[in-house]
Amino acid sequence: MKAVITVTGRDSLGIIAKVSTACANYGANIIDISQSVLKEYFAMFMLVDIDRLTIPFTEFVDKMTELGREMGLEIHTMHEDIFNSMHRI
Amino acid sequence: MINMSDILETINMIREENLDIRTVTMGISLFDCVSDDVDRLCEKVYDKITRCAERLVPVACEIEKQYGIPIINKRIAVTPVSMIGGACDVDGYIKIAKTLDRAAEALGVNFIGGFGALVQKGTGKSAERLIEAIPEALAVTERVCSSVNVASTKAGVNMDAIAVMSKKIKRLAELTADRDSIGCAKLVVFANVPEDNPFMAGAFHGMGEPETVINVGVSGPGVVASAIRRAGDCSLPELADIIKKTAFKVTRMGQLVAVEASRRLGVARGIVDLSLAPTPAIGDSVARILEEMGVDICGAPGTTAALAMLNDAVKKGGVMATSFVGGLSGAFIPVSEDEGMIAAASSGALSLEKLEAMTAVCSVGLDMIAIPGDTPEDVICGIIADEISIGVANNKTTAVRIIPAVGKKAGDYVEFGGLLGRAPVMPVSPHGCGRFVRRGGTIPAPIQSLKN
Image (cartoon, rainbow over all chains, first blue to last red; front, side, top):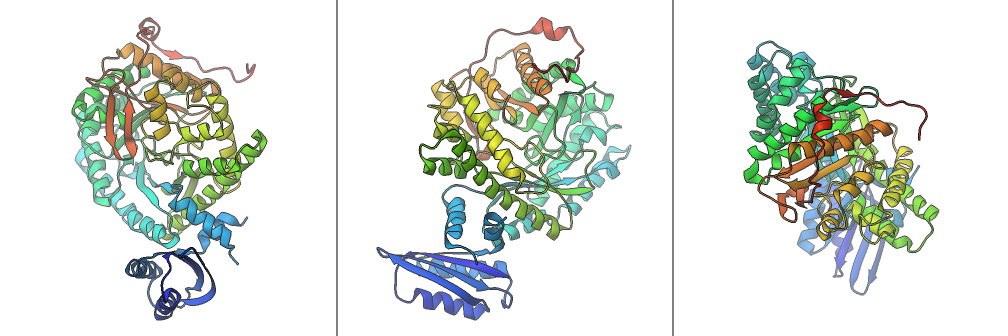
């Protein structure tokens, strides 16, 4: 199973490093990353494999939200099924 | 691979356009709780509801978190209480209402529906006593909702029941006068009531339903309004297509939540209700969709046509997105719960009569409408009979949830707060139909051919 992590907010040093470290710590394997910065505004989408998470997924969602709060960013983690069901027939 | 623009679209719908699942409602049959001892009955009702729905709120919260989609309400619908309380007197019914309220509180759900009766063809003794109990039952409880079906296309219109319900609505308004007559917001009078509707105040667990069931109501007026705005000056067929596509996406999310909720709870999957349900929040209004479509202000000539097109497109888009459609499935136009409706009614552009016309082409009926507290029973009776007849003649559900706000006159406001919102008190015709109602009996069922 996969999840989509979106990170948005003001650009700063080491955002990808911190988010990917957190992913590694909780056993979320990064499959794909897309990132851009537009006028100091940082936006990143990560597709992660959550089959080998070391904590329950809902707890992982909270941990990532908390990390975002610490870094002054918005981090949302959503199960991929919501995108698949909405945009695929 | 998931497409980046799809991710952005979904996130934008949820964060900016108020997309949410309006309700996950668990239906629970109470038939096995029947007893001739009311205390024993209440004990069984409490035990069954709290046992069956024990995990409803935690599971809904878990789904909410996993998919990042807000689920606004978690609710419970039970077997119409008049069907299990046949041996009860009026006080007994009030006791059952209090029991339902306690069970809802224990489970953390904000409304529990089903304190009601079906009397379309005549009022039985147990239904009569339940209706008698409604004003006090709803005044002394917080979470209990009540609905009474007074008519159907097959049975006709039970005018005697409408006359009684008008009295009960007035009484309930008086009993809750200190809170802007809020009790009336929990009471609906129906024609052709659906038995699997997940939305309050009209939800109950119908007789043909499984033992327990999960029904889901979607929402998303803000998403539809934004999609129309983005489309600019497109033609009407293009507009219909945009609405259909949006409704499809919104409903797919409802379907996902319905499947997950029923799987995790081990409860039968019921229906997804394809309704556009507004809230008083800015950007979550059905009236604003109509204005975005090109009507100057909700209530202006053209409103009914725009609403008919919207309602139809929502259904066409939604039907393909879910395996089982049910409930009310259509655009809701509750005045106090819709920011645009409140504005239109306050400015005088939207009248009670126009609302009545609009209900002929959408769900549900005259909903959350405040009228002066001194409106005579005869007039309320006429308003209900008119609305109910629209449903009966057109083979659709219609309903009346009207609030004769004690001490208020046209132009004043009632404030309920939360999802129930606020409403301007709308002027009502001073003319009644007392003689017509007092003739008594039932208006015969309408002919189903020669449709003109």
